[in-house]
Image 1 (tube, rainbow, N blue to C red):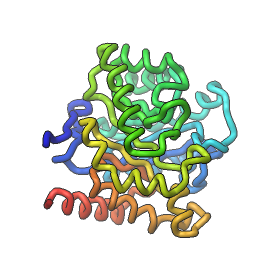
Image 2 (cartoon, one colour; image 1 turned 90 degrees about the vertical axis):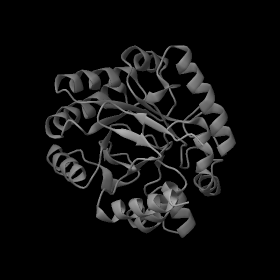
Image 3 (cartoon, rainbow, N blue to C red; image 1 turned 120 degrees about the horizontal axis):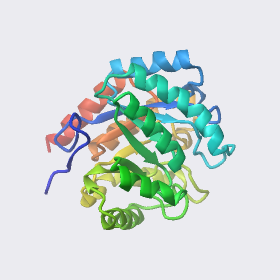
Image 4 (tube, rainbow, N blue to C red; image 1 turned 120 degrees about the vertical axis):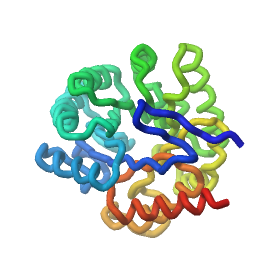
Length: 287
């Protein structure tokens, strides 16, 4: 079967034959479900970002709006006030071969983030959990600027797809839409949307998606998995506190990599995670 391979900018290959990419999560939203991931202090943000890069992160995901369905809603103005200083700082301190992922659903946030990145000659990718459905203008921005994009596959609202078959069906539609506008499909990364995004999506659905992740390879796009400390782990292990879900996260991460994930979005960028990822991908390549 044809191997998945994209070159995201000149310095980063992503695909079956390349090491799994680690994306470190830098939350700027106090509303986030895992308080240990919130860095609303710029000094702490700088320290953590540099440590993540030192520990092997090739992407840093900056998000100023909690996307959990129960979270407090904020305005675009407030999202900008949170992300702009952090974007400035991150661009100043990280090496040029680390990509900044801007976790947003809005064109205005993406545009101002791109302006800052260009000023510092850094590269970005847009991470949209709504699959370009919240703000139609973000789709135009992506196409106009040829910016790489992570799309969490969704039909109407973030995370509303329950099965791997639904995810494949809706992903094809989005890929075809972007392609019809002249967008280079090599810039698309797919996120299957693990998590309790809608009431109907219980932990059983999340586990089945992870267990069948290799089926997404039929789309020939790199796969990002965001499972770090999420509720399906807490429900399965009867651990309500996200702070105590590290072991479950590491276990699920190993399986996701073995099943074909190319990028792991995680709160915990350290040697333990790196070794687990490397072991899982080594076993995957041996079969």
